[in-house]
Image (tube, rainbow, N blue to C red; front, top):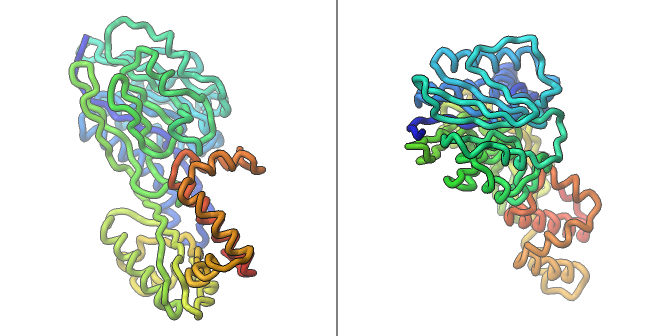
Length: 422
């Protein structure tokens, strides 16, 4: 039976994320950060209510860790109850951060809540007594699952002929190599089973890998947790028309935005100029997203003047306080996480590149890597710590490779010139 309806797909809620390592914050900002993941999940449910969705799919990692707080459990339960009041069902699988072994049974959930176990199971969504969708899912029994769970979905029967969503926390290696390779699978594995929409979790960047036949989708996490998860986060609203995926629309859920910002300090004479420019960038953020809070990491880059030694004096915590004291209005929304330096002395670099010395040879050796960064993929596995680095670096991404090359060049140049590179 075919039908027309819509649903919401989210993942990686990471409720109760601690947001450590941000230095001193005032009580108001600390509270905003602590509440951000809870507020973001409420926005997911509000989206489902506003858009008249039939159900919500939660693809794992509801909590940030297996030792989740009572507040986190109550916040999740209350959001599910809000969905129940509006006739919306919620389906959930467990991931590596919230495996079945960590689930506590001390809180009861309403009948609209469905939680999958460690064996593949199929549940049905009905409207007026008629089946409109089948949800097939499987959860992580423990935190580390190395089995390709996608292969178990081959047991999903071809009949009845009904729209089927596969709910799974997994890692498609060709899509992201910076996440731990739990439940590793390939796109081909997902294509070979009777599933119309793969509601995936684990990867924190939103990505519609395929929009149909079958749709394969990572919504990413609903709230960034550190500067490496910058930009707008959210969930997907999916429209199904006569049993086929018609439209996949992104919906924002972030309550705090993280930013990685660069400040060009070329020809600046002192720290006041840098602070003024950072203030302008902060005001711009607050003006562009007036309803959100922001956490910014500034990186000072460019070719400094001879007075460039002042950059060592800049401290993110101090500058954050300075900026807020200048303007208690919009700047109250912006917290500066850190101020880093990434200064390339262009004049020195350009001069050395033409000299016949070891430094010049070093710079010439870097050039082929800039032109063909893919070479780096063959070199990196030879280094100690490569496997550990894969947990937070996506070397399949060309931009990441270029960033590694740039930082290697800066570090090498700093050492050869006897300078400190922060």
